[in-house]
Length: 127
Image (cartoon, rainbow, N blue to C red):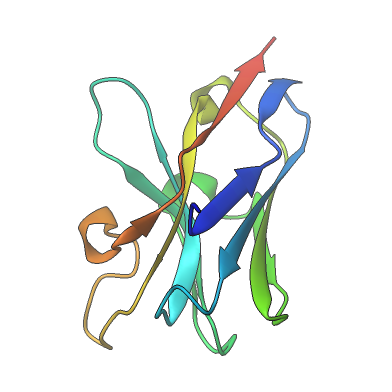
């Protein structure tokens, strides 16, 4: 069973909105942060938005600030929701859900600090 399950990717027009969901089995994952990263061919995985499980800390990537909303529920199976508005062609990427247990001084938007990953969902923005 995959520990992180993503849904919501697809094709969207420029200026549109998209909502991605990621569900994690809390019984299988030890974490205090959960969120989203994205990657395009030949580039490093980029942090989009991450949220602490206690809702006290949130971090957004520079390229999406002002256009992204991240939220979560605290059910036994935690689900994180990423809403992206005002989509641009540069938002086209494979989006990955991630979860991990990070220390206070660790970069929350650095992919290597997360050890649980979903399989990815493709988002394509076209004009």
